[in-house]
Image (cartoon, rainbow, N blue to C red; front, side, top):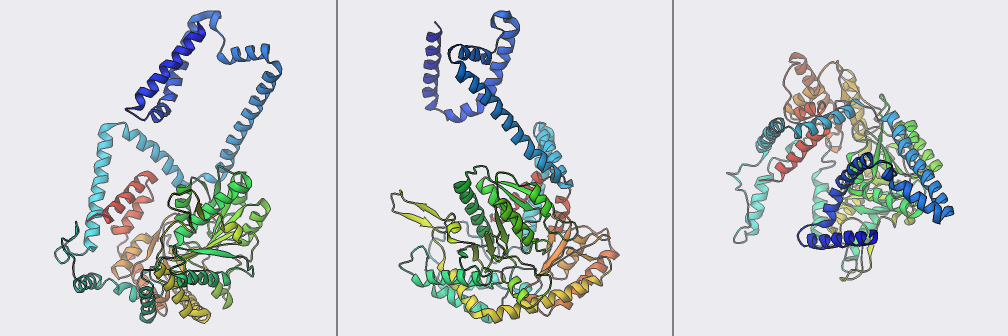
Length: 601
C-alpha cells in the first residue's frame, strides 16, 4: 500500500510538472515555493505529532536511523558521526568569519545603511508612506533633469535627433554642427580650472594624437593578420610601461585595456580564476580599504566575489595592515592596495602588504591608475615620501596603470600588469567549441579600437623618459605651492599623507562643501568627497604654474563662506550633503535616476 501511494504521488508530481511546464517556468516556481511548502509541511507535522500520540511521536530522522542501525549498523554509525562533525565544522566556519569581521565592521555610515534599509523595507509595506517616498524620489528626478538641462545644448539651436535622418547629412554640415556644439566646452579645462579630467592638453600633443588616430582609424587588434603594426604597438606600450614598474623583474607582462576600471576588473577576474584553479577556492574574498576605488566594488559585484572593507588610519588614511591580516580567511584570494588612493592621494604601506601576501600565499594588486606615470619618475627625481610600490616587492602579483591619465594618451587606454605570463593566462577568454571558429580574447572586449592603441604609442614615444620626468617635476612643484598655500588659510587643513598629485583638504570650522560651491562660482571644478567630507584637487599639466592662482581663489571662497556660513548648498554639493546622512539604498536609487537622465533626450 505504501509503495502504491509513493508511486501515485510521484506520478501526480510528474504529470503536474509536465503540464505546468507548458505555461510557466516550473523550476523557478518550485524554487520560490519550496521554502513555503516545507514550512507548511512542518506545521502540519507538528499538529500531527501533537494529536497522534505515541504511535507517530517519532521524527523521520529517528525512523531512518532506527532502520539503518538495524540493517546497516556500521554505515549508519559512520554516517551519523560524519553528519555531526561536518555540521559542527559548518557552524564554526559560518560563525567565526562573522565574528572576525565584526571587529572592524562598525561605522556610523554602515549603521545608517543597515537601519535605513530596514526602514525602507517597512515603508514598502505601508502603501501611503511608500507612495509619499516615491513622490519625493520623483521630485528629485525632476530637479536632476532641470539641473542637466541648465548645462545642456539648446534644443532650438541644436534640434534633438530622436530618429535617423531620412536622408544622410553632408560631411560639411555634420562637422559644422559638431564644431558649433563643442564651442566653449574646452575653456575651463584649458584654463586649468578643472581637477583631473584632462591631464596634458597642449595643442601640439593633442594634434599628434589626432593624427595618429586618423592613420589607424579602422584598425582592430583582433585581426592581427590585417594590422600587425597595431598589434606591435600594443606590445610595445605594455613593455614600455612595464619597464619602469617591473622592479627589475623581466617576467612582468600585461595587456592593454579600455581604462582603469577594466584593468581592475581583469586583475580581479584573473586572481579569481587563478586561485580557483590552484587552490579550489569557489567562494573568493578580496580585502580592500574603505578608500579603495569603486572599480573594485564593481569588479566584485560583477564577478560574485565577497569584498571585505577594512578601515584606514584616521590621520594618514593608509590601509590598516593589522585589519587586513585579521580578515584573511581560507577564501582570501587578493589584497587590494592603492598607490595613490583617489580621495586623499595616500600611498598604502605596500611593502608591509607584500610581506603579508607572501606569508599567506595570496595575491596583491596595486591600483596605480593615477600614480603609474608619476610615482616612478617622482622617485627618480628624489622626491621624498615615495615608498616602494611596484613589482620590486615580491608579494605584488598585479598592477593597473592608466596611460590615458599621466601617460597623456587619448581617453580609453590603460595597462594591467602581472608578475608572469603564467598568471596573465588566467585573464584570457578562450573557447574552442564555437561554431564560428576558434575564439580567444585577451580582455573583455572582442573588437577593440586600434586607433586608441596607436595614439597611446604615439604619446609615449613623443614624451620619452625625459618628457615624463619634466612634467612630473612641474606637477610636484605645483603641488608644493598649493599645499603651502592651504596651510596659510585659516579654517582649512590638509588630509592624508598624499605624496604625489592629489591635494585633499577639509575644515573643522566651515562646511567644506560650501567652500567648493564658492570655488565653482569662481570657475573652478573640484572633486567633492565623503567619509570624511572633504574636497580635492588632482593636479595635472593644466595647473602647472597656476598654484598661486588656485590658492588665491580658495582663500576668496573661504572668506565668502565665513561671511555667509548658513548659505544653501547647490548642485553636486547638495547631493553630497544629503548622501552623508542617508542610507545607501535611496542614494543609489538617485544615482541610477541621474544615469537615466544623462541617457535621455
